[in-house]
Amino acid sequence: MSEHTLGSSHVPLRDLVTDEIRQRILTGLLPPGERLVEDRLAEDLGVSRNPVREAIRVLATEGLVEVAPRRGAAVARPRPAHAEELFDIRMALEGLAARLAARRRDGAALARLRTVLDDQRDADQVGAVADLNTRFHTEVAAASGNEHLHQLVGPLLRRAQWVFLQTAYTRAGESLTEHERIYAAIAAGDEESAQALAVAHVAAARRSYLSHVAAQPAT
Image 1 (cartoon, helix red, strand yellow):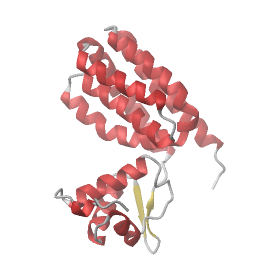
Image 2: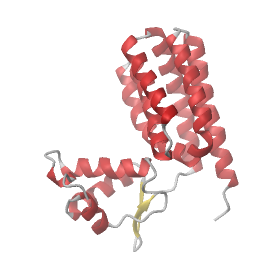
Image 3: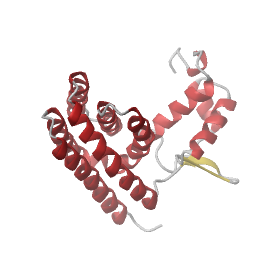
């Protein structure tokens, strides 16, 4: 374990621990169904059990963790119905974000998007691919220049990354190609195309996820 632990930071421990466990879930280090043992997590993070327990409560309210009597806490499994609702919202908000980003054509924002795309092309681990996928969509929302939209999209994208992990192996290449097209439309200032491509991108992710779910054995 590194000499620098979460317990050595001056930031409130509950927030740090919550962020760390959330990130481990979103990158697949803690996969769906994995039990969250307080003692083990506390030792790993260099903190006491209390902030871990508090973090689990927070993540349970976000739907990332499930707590069952006598079984304790475990990483939740994405539910298809909830994922479908998420895709519906993303199609509306991310389409708008891409349109507004194309309208602004901010040079600094475009440079950040280009960097994310370059990093995405070089990524070779599923967790990194999923994280960069989220960063791209976050940067598009930021590029819109609409702070309210940016704040709305952020929490949705955390959930979306969790869903994306389920198909990251099969979707990574297609997703990057679609991102490149969205970027090109934004860079060209083509509002109509940017919005249409963003909506089509989310729709393709929905189809891939639903196909993945349909292929899973019944439990």
